[in-house]
Length: 306
Ligand code: CP
Image 1 (tube, helix red, strand yellow):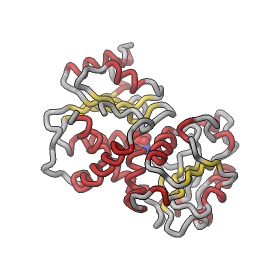
Image 2 (cartoon, rainbow, N blue to C red):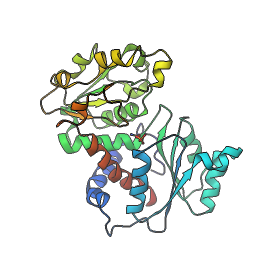
Image 3 (cartoon, rainbow, N blue to C red):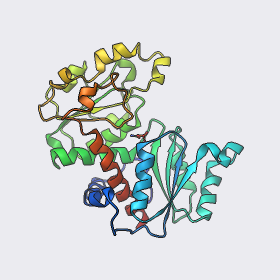
């Protein structure tokens, strides 16, 4: 693996190897340690979209492995003067950066930078368009595995919300399939469901309602309602959305009593998820965030080793 652009074509053994590595890096992820295999490497964070969790955790992951970190500020960079992204990358390579973490609105950008970079460089997608968010997919799988064990074939998983526009949902569905999930259910208003032939969701079933999706399930993966979709007329109102698709404690009671609730963040509290669920005993949302540092350490170390 030279780049990490998607989980789509990642072999099961590589995916599990990354999860195992992340699990063993958990202590080093939370506290500084002597484990610093990236000393002498430079990681460049190239974020052309806002981010809190992904950007901060890549920075911490790189620093905890001993790398130098270059946080590229898109808004004050020479891309604003017309410099291409490829020229930007090549200039950063000329300063010694070799690991590029890229988030962009257009799904083709990480792949085109991967094609343009020098032989010793690697590109990691930190979220591209609606296509892929591979490290989020990995940290979600690690969080599920910690709580539910390694046998995904016993699990029923529901993905709920704006699935059509969600790169998180695509990476999660791809990883769940690779790990042999027992059943994957999708629940969303008609306007926010993926296209029927979207290969990321092959094998998933579409529930008629949120209640049907939650019935007896082990893992509930909530998604952010992208509020800009309201302007497109895809959602009538936030109140209606919460009424029909919001996860309340009463609704969560339809799932198994030991079901866990994930959300990639940022959350719209009171829109897709109630406070009492987000902060409740079944929520593993902050565990996802902690696991994000360990997963990104595992990915950076794997790629730096070549
Ligand atoms: N989950 C996620 O990608 O969050 P950020 O947009 O804050 O990075």
